[in-house]
Length: 625
Image (tube, rainbow, N blue to C red):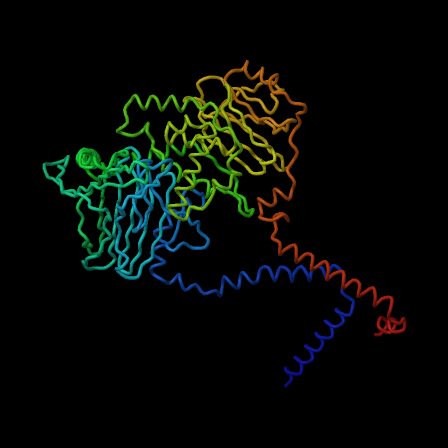
């Protein structure tokens, strides 16, 4: 009873103290601290409670854990935009870019029901009724699936997790052997027993195909392996009713695979694809045999590569590395841009995915085994002559070049748009050089960089330089690489830094108008301000001819040259934070405004009470002992 009475007393005393505080004796400092504590409470407590008490039922799912284990090695690449992770079906936070492989000779989406595509026009638009992708059958039970497109290696990884086993796949269209599709399959059995699983095998819907079986001898011993050879005609919708003869060679595969108990089962499968140019339909029989011989020869050459030496595993790994090296060389030239949080902005994820899609539909002639030495020399000359490329607006602002890639039709349409744009904007010589030239042309187009009459000029308008740009290893001839970096400083002004990766002679640069002395370039960065001229001219010039650069300012007729003004703060904030209010979220500023409003209401209440209440009442209140 005593404790209860004391509790009542304490509660009543506390209530009276709170009432006296609310009646007007609280100071402004205490009020501000109180409101600030309330704001912090509402910001911090909900996330903490969500973290502590939110249920995560999916984390207990063994299939989810299996898939997370498979995808973990690719998380960093995905964050750096060097790969794209996509679940099936894709998650809302993921980019819905279809997994695709290609080498300019053929291409295919990595999906069980995806058909092979071959070159037609500027992209892989002609479907072949062949479904070449091999995988575990989804009818084997509950499963989860995801894909990872590794841009820098040109390999699509695919993972399937079942209750008792999981499959890991690597698919790629080989770069140096353009007629070869490679599928590496690795199935891990987690159970302590042997059992069979069903496979999805290559299948076709050709009309009246011609097929047979051939034997190809091993390069290591006298044994022979049986291969299926199939040929068919693909009708073209042209006025001459021409056809294309397609021949396909692949190893015979069993529809069921026996898994080792608590072990790994591996399959390394090659498929050779060869097709003709358009021919009259009545010449199918005459051309078929020759086309099959070429397909068999490609398969024989590739098989000997993967079986060379005493250790076939080492030979196979070298065969894969040969493909990866080509893709690594292509990505040596590239472009990066600071990430923008503004709505509908183009960021590194879409840029890299688009570059990969375009390069996957262009051949690397200079690195292919079947290309003659004379052709490779011609390609080297084409790479060194880029006069007139790129002669238009910068492509980061062209919405039609950054459309969706959520289907094979949309991807092919996007690639056709890019190839047409580059060709019509003066980059036809680079396009003839193959993939090495195409990526050069694309990187030039991102900043409207143009080779023109003995110099390289940077034609972008200064108002678009509100994000950091990095143009990496631009070819100036075949022996010089130029790196161009645009950085937005703390005062919201853009500056340009130039460095040579390598060079065969002395190179010079000048900023807009070329009024200053040419600056000798080297491996260390040289900084240039971004200037705005009237009328608008290029903001940077680079050349190996110093006299040409000294004369440029006489040929560039400008009325006024001044340093470009700083970008407005709200523009920089929009890209950095997704809104115009700076680095803090919108809810924070709304809360601050609410606190200010409440504070002024409370202040008005105090003033009203001070001047409107009777003086006796006030004197009684303050003098009461």
